[in-house]
Image 1 (spheres, rainbow, N blue to C red):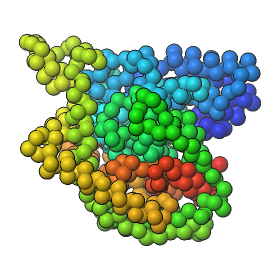
Image 2: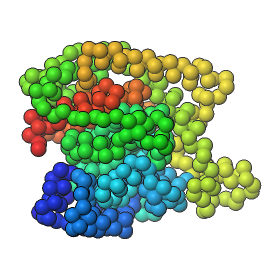
Image 3: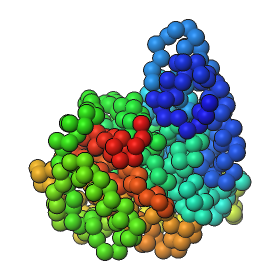
Image 4: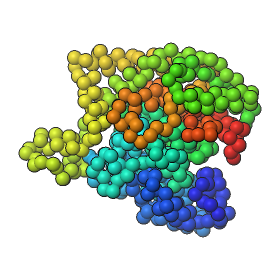
Length: 490
Ligand code: GLN
C-alpha cells in the first residue's frame, strides 16, 4: 500500500484497519525523504528520534485500545520558526544556528497531544522574510550552511517553491509528509501553497496561538496549515486553534464547517476588480477565470465588488511590518539565544560583540528590514510613516468590512505569477515584494484566507478565498465543494 500520498482521513482509516502501523508509516516517510529530499531540500533537519518515539506511542495507544484521535501517528513537518521542545529552531538564521527550543509552541503541543508524529523542521526564508525560501541562511546561496541546499519546487525543480514557508509546501507537494505547519505574515503560507499546488490556510488573526512562533511582525503573524486537501486543512486547523493564555491576542471559538452543497451554494462570492489587473500573468488569469466559470456552472453566485484602498496595501505593509521586525529582532544579540563563536575578527568589548554578532548573524534582507523599521519609528519620522500607515491599515480593513456586507467570501488570485526561476528575483527586492500583492491585504485586515490549486495543465496556479473574521468555515466549505465537484477529489 502506498502510504506517502495519503490524506489525514485516509491515513487514519489505514491505521485503524491495521493496514500499517504508525512506526511503519514513519519509516516509509523517512525512506521517501531519503529518496527525494536530496533534490528538493525541503527539510533543514530531521527529528528521527522524536518521530519514532511518537510513532511507537501511537502504536501502543492503539494496541491498548485507547481512544485515538484523527491525528494519531500522522507524520507532519514543522516550519523551523515554530518551537519543538529540545529540538533546534533556527528560523533559517545564522544568529540562531545553535539555539534549541526550551518549550513547545502551543500549536505543537496540541498536535503532540493529538498523537501526531514530527518528521522534521522545514526550510524557510530567514525569519520568514521573503517569497522564495532563497533568503535562508542555510541554503547554498546564503552561505554558512553545513551542507545546506536550495529548496526546489517539486513541480519543477528549476523553480522556487515560494516562501517563506517554502520547505513546508515542498514537503507536502513531494509526499515527504502528510501535512505541515507554516506561518503567514504577508502571504507565506498561501503563496508557496499556490506555487507548489497544495492547499494553504492562513487563519484569522487570533484564532491560533502565536506562543512559540519566533516573531516576525506580531500584529500580522499567524500559524497555519499546508495540506493536500481542504478537508485536511480543516482537520489540522481545528487541532491547533483556540484560546491560549500564553497569547493574549488568541480567542476561543468553535468553527464548524458545513460541507453540505445546498448550504455552500447559499454563500455569495465577491470578485474585487482591483485584483484582476494588468501585469498579472495570463496563465494565472486564465486559470482563475476557469475557477469562476466552474463555480458559476455549479450555481454559485458571484458579484463584482471594489476594495478601493488595495493599491496602498503593499506600501502600508512595508512600513508596519519592518517597524515590528525591528522591535522583535532587537532581542537577538548573539549571546542570549545562541552564541556566535566563529567571528571574522576579534571581539574588543561588549558593544563590539553586539555589532559583530548582529552584523554577521543576520542576512541581508533581515538587515534591510531592521534598518527600514528603525527609520520609520524614529522620532522625527514616526508620524509621517508609522502613524500614517496605521491609519491606512484601518481604511484597508474598512474596505473589507464594507465588502462583507454584500458578500460572504472573496475570490482572487494568490500571486500575480506562477513559480519563478531560482535566482530570478534575488537581486531585485521590489520584484520579490510584489509577489505578495494579493495576499498582504488579508494580513493587514486580520482575515482568514485559503489558497487552493486551480485546474491547469502547466505550473500550479493558486486561487485565494478570503473569509469574514472567524468564518474559516465558509471558505473551507466553498473550497471543499470546489475540490469535490470540479477537481473530482475525495
Ligand atoms: N513575503 C512577505 C515578506 O517577505 C511575506 C512573508 C511572510 O508572510 N512571512 O514579508
